[in-house]
Length: 158
Image (cartoon, rainbow, N blue to C red):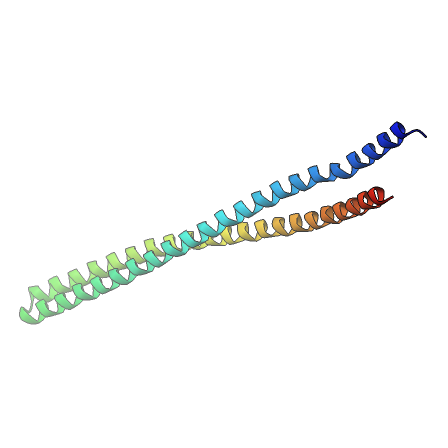
């Protein structure tokens, strides 16, 4: 076999070995996409945690305000009997009704936030699973590259 044909065979072998690098680029792109999705999911989780904290603060504030209204109603009832007592009870019932309504609203919001948090956590888990799969696939490609490199070294050394 002449030198030109040998060189042609060697170049063909190198071409086949370096074709695996295209697969590595694809895997790296996929890993990057999975990491981006994971970061976005974590950001959503953090945002939902902040919203849950804000809602808890509002609930506490509403409870304190309701307690203040009840306390004011009791003072007024002590000062003026009869109508004042009736009015105080009315204010107390209204405050409790408002607190109950606010608590129901807050419970709905917290429930929705928890659902979004669970979804975000599920999304993060799915993204992590995809990342692990991509890592496994990258490891396989790295093995192929190592094998190709060994063959290249063997060819270059021969």
